[in-house]
Length: 342
Image (cartoon, rainbow, N blue to C red; front, side, top):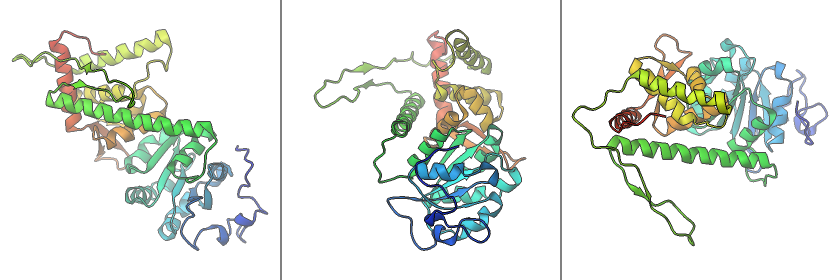
């Protein structure tokens, strides 16, 4: 439970007066105008079992709480809701039947840029939620801590315009920026592999520094008997990567982007389908981190979402055509060079 020095949605708070039904009064619902730029308006969707933790997370991140609604009533509320900056959708503990009708509207809001959606969920809900929620403005948090929830709300837009003194929130923003940069680098590398290009790169340096050329490794030229890539080779490389954790401990060699690329490549060679939850396991990192990487890799055009034709509640992931060609060229170059895939 949050311990906040700011008042939560409790009785006696003038900004959160109680209505006759015991819910949040009309003065706090935000019908009167657009959200304040200093305190972006936030709507919470959560069932009663979560207590007042969601409201405290909003307030701790510097947001303006525009109300709380249950999943059963969320669809009607969202259809008539005024301007919002963020929706905190607490799916943890909620039933699939209650959540499912609301998801398409949340996805549409994110895609239109009407609001950013922060979704908390349990591991068992990954496939259900990711099948529908694929917009750019959606952030998944799998079994998050209080600090992770507050940081995600801040990054989503709450507290915008405020000076933040919480180091953990600043660190989270920097980490996300680095993640985006890393995905962009991976996408460019695969694009060069697809085109069969290598190049001498001059890394960016401060104005006073001198750039040193970094010569990329040039693969052997294609041969007539191009090496055949098998799913078994890829699976063995994945197993070899996991063996490192047994001897050096987990976390030291985290590389979710490459682990997921290898897993999807092996599945493509096997003509198998990979669910979102399965890919999260293959990433070998925390589910929230894996979901964040999946979102960035999809936005970068490396992954593609493919609906399950037999179950609307689930979606599969696969390599895009560009990523597939890049992986095949890389694997073939490894084979021609007599190198081991790692």
